[in-house]
Amino acid sequence: MKTFTGTPAATTAAEFAPAAAPVSQSQTQAAHTTDPQVAAALFAAWSGDRFVSIASPPGAGKTRLITHLAEQLHRRAGLKVAVAAQTRAQALDVANRAAAVCASPSTSPSTASTPAAGTSDEPALVADPAADPVVALLGKGKLRPAGLSLDAAHIASDKLRGRHGIRPGIVVSTTKRWHWTDTATWSADVLLIDEAWQLTWADLLALGPLAPQIVCVGDPGQISPVVTGSTQRWQSWGAGPHTPAPDALVSVYGDEVTRQRLPRTWRLGPATTALLQPIFYPTLPFTSARPDRWLSVPDGTPDGARLPELRAVAVATSGGHHDPALPAAAAAQVRELLRCTTHDTERDTEAGSSTGRTLTARDVAVITPHVAQTAAVAAHLADLPEVLVSTANAAQGLEREAVVVLHPLAGYRTTPDFATDPGRLCVALSRHRCHATVIYDPATADVLDRARREDPHNDTLAAHVQVLDALRP
Image 1 (spheres, helix red, strand yellow):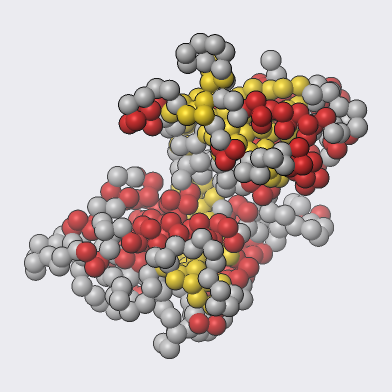
Image 2 (image 1 turned 90 degrees about the vertical axis):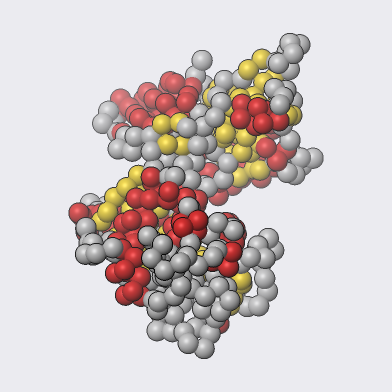
């Protein structure tokens, strides 16, 4: 692990930025002072570690970590920070959240008084907030994206220049747009990669010239990067161009990569955590830190009947994975869930009430494995356009109070790689905050049993068997 002698602030910041006025002690009371994971990641990046890889379970605060890292590395160390997201929606979200953190009175230099000489025990280097925007979203043309915070600037790629262009301290964009950035005219000191396990090793190599330090943050249980060409020639190579970037980084550089993890999920409850962690995250132990949340269904009692965190509904099929019974059942479950009330102990305590609130369409999602199934479910729910209906691939990073899941193997009588991809099942089962209903085909158990007899050492099939056995009544 690469480190510098002396204090991180005195060495790394001085290497990259001119001196500026120190910040006040109140300014340093940021996320790293109360969150040891943010502190550890900040220490590694600020110390100069060339590669940092942070593995996270679902709902552990990956984007929060990214935004606080970006703010601290820029505000306190004076570094230029680039953030690479994997979709435009993710980039917009990161830009808005980073802008909110940087605009907070507790972190804004414009609201802090300069301490007297000798009274500040943590001098830091900060950029002049009046000179350029702190946070900017890199885009195409002059059209400002809808939903972009007023605290964030929007700049076109050709305006991101050196001496004569706009020089924001934190620049957010998608990986694909970063690939087109001319690093001869603009580069960063640190590159933060959000949802890094969705990025291929080839794409990370293309980002290399952008910054000398790279911090990867992501969920190793998610769906592997989508590659349309054949990757057979690299199947036995840990650093094949199709490999998830953090895995390849460790394969190539080994102990030079500083590896960290986020130890708890704030989204998933105890039952979901107990199911997913040993099956999909055997090398990433984590626990549930979620406050007590649940759904209740009207049953004539004052509080209603409490729904379990996970439940399974059997739907027999005879027409393959496009059997119309599957989307019809999913839509019916959505309508049932919309009769439910969501309860949150923290929220209800603050409100002084234990009655909860009725679910709305915006609280519910349907996750399917196939685009055609998504279209069919959406047609059934045409009168409820605010219900999120999405494939597992597109739903990565999203969450809702309640989720209806179409099991990836429902309707199949074989076990193709697409349907048995463990990441697809893991994503589908980890989008809910309160409750998930899984629609499965009763024939799937026999299909998996036959496949296991033919290939008894297949870990992917074993994972599907474990999940199905745990879900079925």
